[in-house]
Every structure is written in structure tokens, then in C-alpha cells.
Length: 380
Ligand code: SF4
Ligand code: SF4
Ligand code: SF4
Image 1 (cartoon, helix red, strand yellow):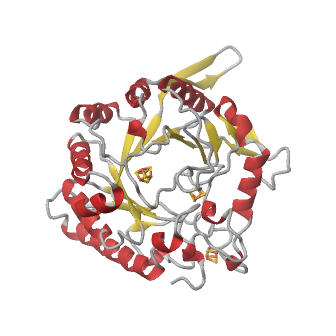
Image 2: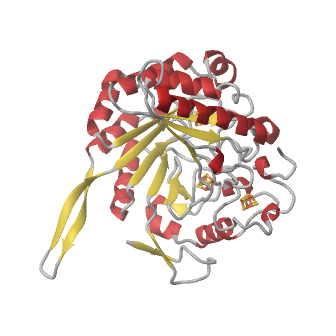
Image 3: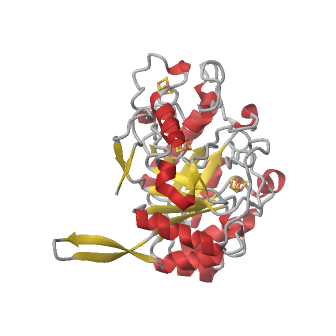
């Protein structure tokens, strides 16, 4: 299936792109943590984001069917903290068993269909007793779930800054490794925890974690950018240490013998001029955003946005295709893919670099102010 009108300058009628590959379902506005870098639009917009009634489990199941039947292959379950949705287990039960039909053979006489499971990724802070060994075992057996657990700091850090239970999170990671889920650990990096990040990797590797996603925090909305953004030289030093760690593990294995190789990716886009990925052999970097084209998200009340970090609402889940084809989405996509902050004028990488996360600079004054301060010329 194809969508019309997604590419170009937002005015063409016949440009076509394939259906997006991924959709994030933000199950709930609620969260039990207080991360200062939280990019949920309803947390950092000074109370402007419209909060309406939460969808029930039954309504989410209806949306999942719609999303899968359009042909979207990857569903991310997020929030807030998704496990706090009152029907979370109902939604998971559905996802574990859901199969939908896709045509694989079409002739004049007949159309043959085959069944397909939805691949889904659960993005959680792991701080919920709901993650029993039994539940994690069920998730592991299903084979169609990827579990991503966020880890921000050590025990003291969670008590002081995040209001979370470090032991519980580590227990969830342990259990997930034990049952063979091969979870990934997502580590946000911001000014307050930059000194802890390497130790968090080491501790997770000793448990048996093999996949890591580093998330460079970007100060959206009303966040205090000076408090959130790690300066570029500290970030480079940290990445170098992590790269050395990965190299050591490849050569000698981890202390516990659990890991002989680890995968590390930087999940937040990196401006090419500030971070040269050839400096880091074991960390994958990305520089181009495909927001609104390859992915979109649905908020806890069924409104559609181009991505979790963007505040622009482009439609409602009642009509996903209409939302993706909407003028608002076309304008947003056109802007983030064709315009750069003035800082980038004359750069040779304009076709390969989105200047960090576009949602970070989309609403800022493109001439003078950078929400993603790592883009500021003076910010080293
Ligand atoms: S755990 Fe996630 S949703 Fe909750 S406050 Fe932290 S970043 Fe936001
Ligand atoms: S496009 Fe902008 S952020 Fe990216 S490398 Fe060029 S100057 Fe740097
Ligand atoms: S706008 Fe930012 S958060 Fe959204 S998809 Fe692009 S890079 Fe990712």
C-alpha cells in the first residue's frame, strides 16, 4: 500500500512514498518516574498539550489491528510508562497472540493469504512489579517482542533525581536476561548522569546485557537546556571510553564471561560536524531523521503526531491514512527535511545530516536560538 502526497514541498498531489514502517503507541500519560529529560510532549510544554480521556485496552486493540492491517510492521509500545495503563496485560495478551493476514499470491482466479505476527518493542523503565519471571518468560517464548529497559543512574541517583527503585529495575533486567529475552538497555545521557554512564554499561554487561542504546538528551519544550545538555567535549570523552570498553570486551570478554561482544548505538541523531563517527569503531551513529515518513506515533487519547518528540498533531487514529496525508504532516516533513538551522548554511553534509533531532529545532528561531545546544557554534 502507498500513501499519496507525503513527499515534496507539501503541495504536490501525486508524490508517493511507501507506508511507514513503524508506529509508536503512547499508551498512557502516566509515569512513576520524574526524569528531567523526559521528552513526552505533555511533560515539557508548560501544560499546553491537550490531555483527553485515556483509551481503554479494547480501543488500543482496535488501533493495533488497524495499524497492522495497513502494513506497518513494527509497533513500539511506549508511554509515559506503558505498564501503568490499567489494561496493559490485556494489550500484551492480545499482541502475543495476534496474527493478521497478508496476501502473498494473487492471480485472476484467487488471492492466497498467509498469517503474520506483529513485531513489537516494549519501551519501559522496568520499575514495576508486573515484570514477574512468569510474564517475562511468556514474552520470551512468543518470539515477537523486543524489550527495551531504560537505565539512568545508580541507587542514589534514582532516589535523588528519578524517584525510582534501582533494585527493581536491575531485577527486571536480570530476569529478562535469565529467560532469554536478550533485552536492550537504553541509557539517556544528560548533564547530571554523564559521569555514571560507563559504570551502568559495565554493570549491565556483567548481568548479561548485550545491546545498548545511548540517548543524548535534547531539551524540548520548557526543559532547562543548560541543565540537560551534556557539553560536546564531555560527550566525546564518554563515547571514547565506551568505545574502548567495547573493544576490550571483544578481545578479552566480560569479567563474568557473559558477553564476548556488545552492540552499541547512539539513538539520538548526532550532528556530523560535532561528532565524527569514524572516531568510534564500536558505536553506530545516525544523522538523518525519517520522522513522519518511516514512522509516526499515536498519543494516549488517539491523536497522531509525526513522532514522539514532536508536538504537532496531524490527525486521529480513526483515519490514519488521512492523518499521514494531511497538509500539516506534509508541511512538517517538508520543513524538517529541506530546511536546516542557519548554522548549517553552506555545509556539504546537508543531504546526510538533519542537524540533530529536527523536533529539537523545529519550533525554535532558526536564526538565533538552538534548542539542541550542541548545534550552537559556541557550545563545545
Ligand atoms: S521513565 Fe520515561 S516516560 Fe517516565 S519520566 Fe522517565 S523518560 Fe519520561
Ligand atoms: S548539516 Fe548542520 S549539523 Fe549537520 S554537519 Fe552540517 S553544519 Fe553540522
Ligand atoms: S524528529 Fe527527532 S525524535 Fe523525531 S524521529 Fe526525527 S530525530 Fe527522532
